[in-house]
Length: 571
Image (cartoon, rainbow, N blue to C red; front, side, top):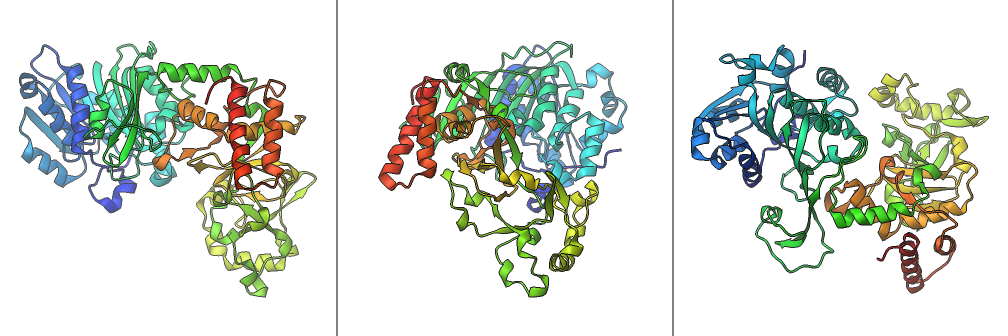
């Protein structure tokens, strides 16, 4: 049995409940889209919101439908917020309203058939004609492992489970074949590896009519990047989606130059012409086109024809994807950074000051700058409880390091209480995600996991990398020049644009995720191709040369130009 998980309209509980109520204008925008699809020659519709809160979405759709249909329709809402349901029932003005204080997910799972939610009709009649919803977003880390496992089993989910994933399955089960779903979700499912099962489910069950990526428009108070999915449920699950749905993509783009002003983001969304528009002090870039569906394990592409042509031109120049050339590893994750990573080791009392040979410099995302960093300027060191034994990682015997033992014992309660360590059967003073010390002799590239601009750099010195970074090493047998070829490409404007278009994963303030699943797919040309050797030498100059400001800027622009020439496109 699934324990109730509801929407509670209390700001301090938003993170745990996922309750981000729908802004009025956004509700109207989605309602207009659905009203144009749902109108039919009948006396009325069954319209449902399974996480209705105070009913903003239901009210918006009721007002957008033709009066004859609205008055003849039944509107059904579920939520666990007693006050919100009471307000909805008291304020309703159109058609009939059946607003219930119930947990839709628990109800969906506990009942043998969705039809048993409604007692007065046959199974087919009780299913909804239209579902409009903004279900709660709560990620696995906040749900907790047990709750996530329950949802995964109940709704046949895989990967990192978010609460809205379960809602998508339950809503689909409650929708008639041919019925319309309009749902506001996090946009993460569009592009992340964790969204694979969701993309697969939506492609299997819906003709996708429209996907609207609302990006960093800040339409919600919370730091949620929303998207809208609109689809028509197919009668036959085995028929795959035709992939002909439309998309709209809108992100803030302060570098765009435009003078065309709009009153709101919603006015931009209703524009017929792609381009950049000003709303107040912000510039937004609008793109529209036809959705491209790949294998569900790959992101959905929201690119227009011109952008798709550009991507194809870049891909034709590739001999490899970056993942074929380099191993990509995430940095160390301790789950107790305050114990393992410090700046003030020298200030500790002598009896608990760990042995010096166990303290190693560690690179944090805040240390990362493009091309090269001075490791002598690193301020943090990590107490690393492993050594290399014939190329294999071996845990330290603390009996040989009495001061380190004393230090760990001083922090034993915190270290032993880490749930990830307990679940993995590691010893209480271990690191959750360690490195093999034998890797430290390799030259590598390092990048922060999140950054507004690429900040890949080269290092040949022996430092560890923190868990907010990734590190890349050449696969065995490849010449070292590939390292510099890759470095020039990954730091370029060209690859930044490729990253945005191919993976569509911007966060707020233009920050990008530099995750393995994206950077492993970067296209890399043949190192013997024209301009490749020139790029390698230019990057070596940038990494190892001593340059003043003007000569450094000139060299970097020459690197940028050479990357564009290498791929055969203009900047």
